[in-house]
Length: 150
Image 1 (tube, one colour):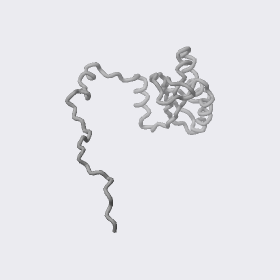
Image 2 (tube, rainbow, N blue to C red):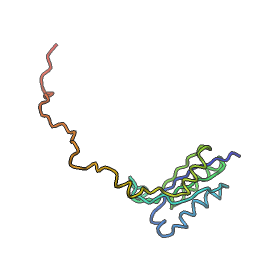
Image 3 (tube, rainbow, N blue to C red):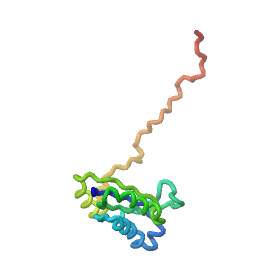
Image 4 (cartoon, rainbow, N blue to C red):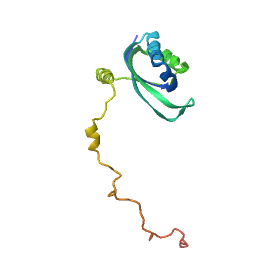
């Protein structure tokens, strides 16, 4: 039995999550525990618009987990997540043992929010003095000239 720590990122159905957040997020915990895994961290990451629709959904709720599980049981967990209606997509990555404590503590702290002062110091790239790099020189030669015959 070889236990590894995995990071699991899930995209959940935002409609179902909005109706019953505890039940939908609880499925992830339930599936991990059913295969004999130990949940280290499980938390909401964010809700956002998806780049492309997944199963007809344009928004998804991202859920982040870190858990320990026997490597042989990961296939069973994978299958459970595939058949769950509330889980649109998921990804499991094995975590390097040297990074486990740092990643788990970071996940427990929650998302980082920039300070308002830090945002104010960012230069506005859309100011009027930005130089346009578009070539407006019309003096280039046309490619229609006949090539000399050999």
